[in-house]
Length: 126
Image (cartoon, rainbow, N blue to C red):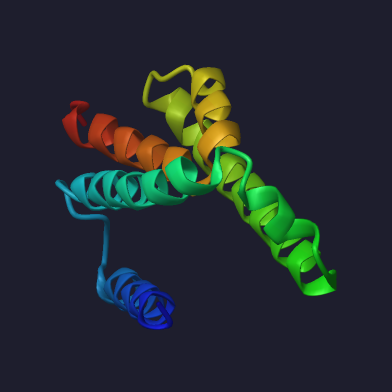
């Protein structure tokens, strides 16, 4: 399993390089966070089914590093929500149901919301 975290890190590096090199967001870029959300959800089903829906909790309270990771995840979700909610409103979306999804699923919901915002922005007449 150590290769999965390294694979995820490589994926993040690719995303960072793509964002740095792009002058603007490509029109059909919504499918990237949509596919990431679907893939992460599919992977997440395995631990949910084997360890239960709250199996993550012991992993986040066992030692100071675990708590630090929990805080980091909460900060990241908060920043993502703060940056995405105004764009969602501008795109004609109601952000509150998306917040419920994000609270329930974390990055899965945040990626899904990003995909929807990018889709709405790409289909809205200029």
